[in-house]
Image 1: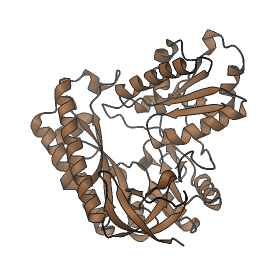
Image 2: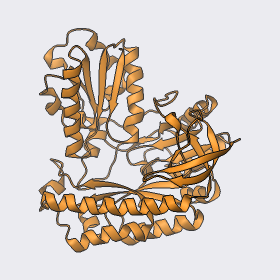
Image 3: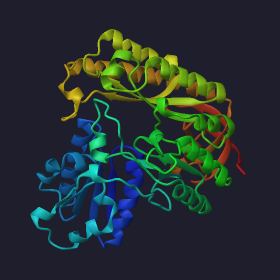
Image 4: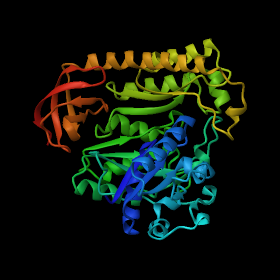
Length: 421
């Protein structure tokens, strides 16, 4: 064994795991497990700790490195675990030097390398040749967040918003496409804040339009989660004018009730979200939306929850990512009047049931359609709408024109028509 990695959380974490693997290998680290944690919910932190303990039981002689947002915000939690050999902050984990002491016996006071993330003012793009187990490759364009939603601990794990210069992003994508990557996914923590810290303040829309113009050989460009209120005119034009920008957008909505949105300190209202979805649908009638929604936020009444439930239909959402509210220590929402756990759990279940119904309706509508499917491992692929497709016998990385012939509970079945040009 050399280096094993375990990733929790977002797409940016997935990308950074690949960077960490590379940096650790550069440092000469062997026989190690790197666990990249998430701090979004208490459950994510619990799962990380459980994984650490299980890893130590199953591999008693392995070196265990813990990093990521939970390590950044709760370093003491992991330092108290005797199973952990090294704890790295979100900035330290991306440098080879941070891993070098693991070749020696580490003094206890050297186990924790977590600096103040709020002091970080720049971010660099980290080029990886591809993503382990993925045919889509993630490219980081932004990190950190300057907003302070009352439920969110992530700004304290990621630091201030900072952007990768456009030229560096374009050059990374050119290199990735030249080596056969058919789909690039732009990632960040608050991606629609892109460029506010760069000279000239280019927007995310400017970046997207520049990529599409300067890398004409790029087959597919996809965006990770976006904040609807920050979407600019340039991005809307790109959505309407270039089909290489995939018609699937994951929205950071969080709730569908105006009072709850205000208490969350979100910057959009219910009407803003609905209008955004309507405007995009006019530009790309085949668009599909996913969204993050929190169930059981403090003070949420049944009527307020019903507004979030109704938002699924009002925005035409297809893929829901439901979070039962989890108070994070140090956030304002943790000090608000809390709902009881059974209510939160029941509301999350109702949202998931609604999400399954809208997903099923989407899958039914797809039957008979012709889609371009980018194949992954094990006969699985993704359409332009990020809908999973089962189509055995085709090599990973192949872009296939396919006829949708049926569905399962969570995906589509298809027959290949031709390999896409």
